[in-house]
Length: 439
Image (cartoon, rainbow, N blue to C red; front, side, top):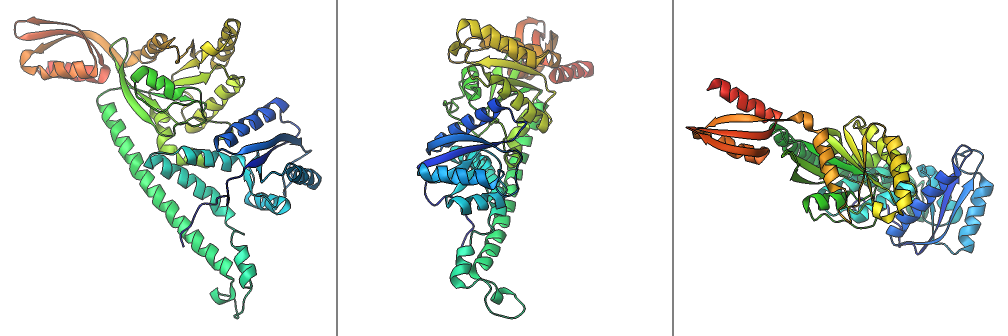
């Protein structure tokens, strides 16, 4: 019998959503998180019976809230005829089991919902492996109790002196088998992902060898990152108005106004309380942000939580070690705002961004793309040289490389030489200089 990730036996039709807050939590923040959970649950095709925030004096070990509040939630779920309970907090395995015993309903926490959404979005082999790894790591400590029904059917303590396999119930033996299979599968996925990481590193090293800079497009989920990549490169990446529409990185090369090539890479979207195990699982993907020369941070200007989303993305970038990267912030979907609100949103985001350039953008109407390209030129200006080169016609292959990796601004022939003015990456310009010295 193979290990399977914990699933609900049937897709819930009506779930009760509950957020548990404590003194010190901001009411608006807690309500915004619950509204976000509603979007996540809806993306799974689950109906919402009701959403409610409850407040407790302090977090309790058994249910997070006190027993009285927990009973209120149980009664509410019963009255609403909800067939699932979803808690907008992170539950320990024991807390999840206690809620399931109390309500006699399947119970998910925020992390499991996010994992389920990621699983529904995974399309490529790499994304599927990354999500499976995170889900199995989540499920592993929750396997205790999954086979208790077999113990009850067969006699849990059994016969046999001194314990051992003969003394253990069928449930205990099955959980041991499943744990072993789960650990083996986790290690196999990690090995496969390490292979993918090495392949990505090889591709990145080749780009660096050629002196081609890279920019990672980062931001909160559904901010318009994939749409921006499509607008700049015609990449054809899936771009829908849903959370985590794409989990895979897509890289495309463009030419900046100064002739410098730039590799743009779309990255997975961030979200508040993004499970740490997902950050770990998607490490090879998120490395694109860590190792990029600069970042394009996309903010959904039309979202009421735009400022908080900006801060969340910056927090995740800092956790990854990419918080100090050169960055341009683009406020996307400006066309959805009334004229008087646009300047206010741009001003407030700029205050958070500090010295980083902040631009107004509408990918849908292709407004602001030129300014973004110029901002990338500015961030990468230290990487290129624009100057004259004299190349012997016998070495015309160098001219072909100039066209490929830079921009030839003018070209003329003098005797046996080609006289070229070009914008080139400094690494390539240095190789040309070394060649000229040898000659």
